[in-house]
Length: 476
Image 1 (cartoon, rainbow, N blue to C red):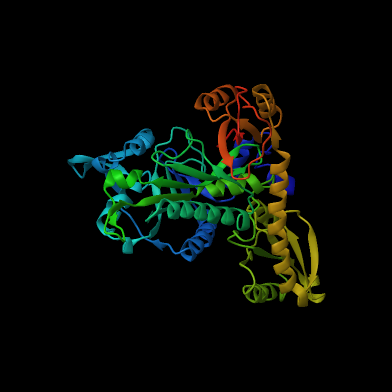
Image 2: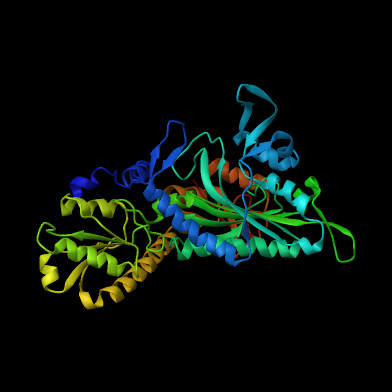
C-alpha cells in the first residue's frame, strides 16, 4: 500500500527538483496560478506560514518593534533617489504605466522592497534625537520579475516581513542589525529545526545600497545552500539620499543610521528540502499546522468514533490535534498524513480502547509506540520535543558531513563535483578571485562566517596572502 501511494512522488536521489515539485503540490501546500511564476498558497501551506510568521512576529515585538504597513506602489522618482539601490533592483521591477484607461504621468513600481517608502516617511516624522530609535516592521507581499521560478524558492510575488529602523549612532544600528540576524537564526534553528551558519556577505553579494549585509545560510539535502534570512546595515547612505536628519543633544543636525532585514516564504522551501524524504514532507512539531492526526481504526464499530473525538478534545490542551473520520481506508490515511509531514499519527481502535491504550507513530523515524491512556498527554509532549530535536540533530549531522575544506581551486572544483555542500576555503578579499571561483565552479561565496578558522595563509584562488575564511557553495 505505502509503495503504491508514494510512487506519486519521484525519489529524491533520482530527480531532486522533480521530488520538490511533487511534494509542494501533492502535499497541498500550493497550486499554480494562471500567471507564470505565481503560486496559490493553499490552506495547509498558509497555516504553515502563519505558524512561522507568529513565532517570528512575537520575537520582533519582544525586541521593541512595531508593525506598520506601507503602500504597494512606489513612484519612479522616489525609487531613483538612491542610485545603487535602484540599479540593484532595476532588472526585477514590475511597472504600472496606466490607471484605468488613462496613461500615468509618472510610472509606478510594484514594490520589490520598501526602503524608499520608509525613508520618505522617516524624513517626515524624525526631527530630534528624542524621536529615535524608530523600530518599524511590516508584513507584506513584494514583486520581483524573476526569469526562472520555483514554488516558495523564487516566485514573482512572495510574502515576507521587512524591518526598517533608524538610529542615532552607527553602533546602535550595527547592534540592531546583528540582533535581528540572531532572531532569524533562533526561528530557523528552534522552530524550523534548520541549523544555520551566520556571517557577513562579501561586497559583491551584499544588498544594493547597504554598507554591510549579514546572512543566515542553511544547507539543503542535495548539498545546495539557501540564503534563509538577511539583515542589512545601511549606515547613513539612504539618510543622505533622502535627507533624514535629526537634531542631537547639542543642537547639531545629524543623519540617522539605518537598518533593514527580511525573512520570506522561501524558508518553507528550506524546510521541505532540509527535512523531507521519499514519502514527502517532514514538518518539525513547532512549525506544524497539525501536530497529531488521529486515525480511528474500525471506526464503524460502536464507540470508536466517540472515543476518538473525546481524545481529540482532551489532547487539544497540549497539542494541535485533528481527526480524520472520513470513510477512506486507514492505509490511505496513513500515507496521506505521512506525505503531509504530520509529526505524530495516533491510531485507536476497539482493541486499544479495551486495553486502555493508543498507538503513536512518529513521522521522522516511522517508529510505533504503544502508550497507556493514563500517560498519553505526558508522553505525547515529550515525543513532540524528541522529534523536534531529532530533526535538528539529523540536519546538523547532514550539514557537517557535507562541509569540506579546499586549499586550491582544483580541490574546490573536485569537491563540488564529488561531494556537493559547503566548502570552507581561504580568500584574499579580491573581487577578481571571487568572480573566477564562480565562473569556474558555479559556486558563490555564501558568507564570511563570524566563527573564523585559519585554514591556511593562502587564497584558494590566487595563492596570495589571505586572512578570511569563506563558505562557498552552489545555491538556490
